[in-house]
Structure formats: structure tokens, C-alpha cells
Image (cartoon, rainbow, N blue to C red; front, top):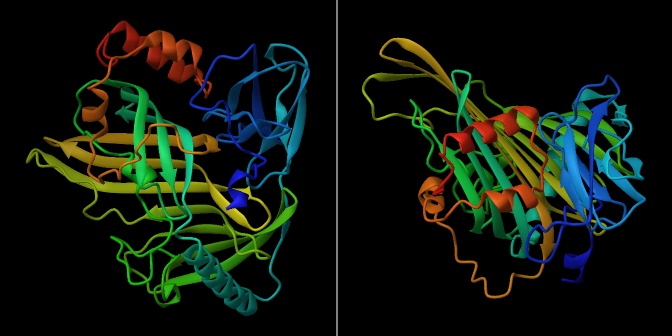
Length: 397
């Protein structure tokens, strides 16, 4: 597996066994041509060895070994963009990403048949590489907002074992979890990041049908929306949804390289019937949504591997007749790929593992989080963290 060590242009690598303070901190903001923030973009050194991701308002902070330092910014749907950091602190101007060139299909019937065939090729390629195992280190952030107020904040570093399908081993490292009781609680929301399969194995089962599976065209309709000229390659943008109206299957979009059949992004909105429930008779569940976006980075010439995942759930309910809304968001990205961490056993992680229960076993080290951040806190996040620290609800202080 020589390709295992090939570096992704957007590779988020900081150090051998976790983040560590470097000499110079560079900060900045990434926006589109209209000045709107670009969240979750990759910001990396030109050689791909060190990097980070922008937060939800397009801000980033990156520690670099020396100056001047060229930076490369990548995000699907935008052209690759560079910037030069010449001094510590904020860049003099925002980094502006230009939209990728778009080509629309000429013949709809042909385009849809082409889309169906491309999805089948992508699935076949994933099956061929299903046994590939890699290792990395990642950062996970989860937030819960109930009726406009944050009541949960969860940060954690993980050693992970990953395959093209999912992350079978998810080993907790340094972590912090601020929690204030509320109406709705999620004990293991990270399951939608670590265990939701990208594709279904032949003969395998899934709670809901997914577009990358055997005989997917029987339940899904695939439409080639456009082709992007994206970061030196073409990406076919394929929308999918139920072939029969009302069929409870996922809908969303696939971004696939038509030359190699490699998958670069999977956006999906999942059916939520029975997914979010309450055993409190005073609570009546209302409409719910769950959207998961999984990004993959190029691996050598013809493959791709997991780079990041974002999940957003919106849960509406009434509590004794009073309307309530809870929004849970999570962001996960791999900042390093490499060999297994020495001494780490990478045991299989149970799907029902409870995040809060695991983190309660650990002491919160505020000095670690001040010195080892790998993602820049947005102004709102910084205020929430400060508030939770002041109320002494982070872990075991």
C-alpha cells in the first residue's frame, strides 16, 4: 500500500501524535467572491504536511514553523487558491475563493444514464478497496443549541482506524464536554460521523437505503446536474433521491471524478422517522431533519480517503404544549494520516458508545486547550466556552 503515504493537498497534518504548539500562529478568514464566509475549507502549507480547517464563519488559525509561508486553500466548488503569510497574526486581507467553472449536461436522458453508470462504477471501486485500512488522528466538535441557547459543547481528539466505508475504531484522547441539562439529550450523536456507512457491502444491511449500494438504481433516481472543473480535475455532480415518491430513502448529492470513479463528497439528508424519540410522555415529537456531509481528499492519482464530516440535526417538539427546537451540529476533520500510534490497540468501537459517559472519566485540562487548538473558535464559540468555564461545567474541573 505505497499510496498510503501519498499526501493529500488538503492534508490536515500537525505532528506525529497530536497537536503541539509551534513557533508562529497565523490567522485569517476565507470568503467567496461575494464576501460570504466559506466554512470547513482546508487551509494547508503548500507541501501538505501541516494544516487546519476553517470554522463555521470561515476563520482559521494555523501554527507554522517559519515565515514567510505559502498557504493553499481548498474547498469543493471553488478553485484552488494560494496566499503568502509573511508575519504572525492576522493576514492583511481575507482569502477569496473563486467558484469552480461549471458545465451543464446537454442531453438530460443521456446525462441521467451516464450518472447511473458513474455511481455504479464508484460503488464498484469502493467495494474493491473495502479492506484498505488506514490510521489517522482527528478533531471532533459538537454543539447543542436549545431554543437559541447553547447547553452542550463537546471537543475531542481521536485516534482513528478508517476504511473507505467508515471508522471502525474511534479511540478517545484529550477531551472536554460542557453539559447543562435540557429538554433533549443526545448520548451518542458522534455515531453519525464515525459509524454511518458511506456504502453498503454486497449482501449487507443498512437502516436506510443509501445510493452507494447493490442495485441502488432500483430505489434511487440519479441526475447529472453539472460538471465542475475543480482543483485540476473534473467532478461530476450527481443528485440522488427516491425513485418512487414517498420511499423513505436518503436524498442528496454525490461528487465523483468521472475519470477515476473516486468519490470526493457525499451530501445526504436522511429520513428521520423513528430516529429521534423521547420516553417522556410530556414530549410530543415534531418534524426533524438530519443532514450529513462527508468530504474526501485525493489519495495519489486515482483514490480518495476521508477528510472531514459535518452533521446537522434539527429536532422540533412540544413540551407540555410549549414548542421547542433543538439543533445539534458536529464537525470532524482528520489533521494527520500515518502509521498506527505506538501502543494503541484500536479496538472496535461499539455503535452505542455514549460520548458523555466516556468523557466523564477524564479530567478537563484548560491549559491544554489554550495551547493546542487545531480549529479557530468563532466569536460565538469563544463566548460559549468562556461562559461554560465560568460556570465550571467543563468535565471534572
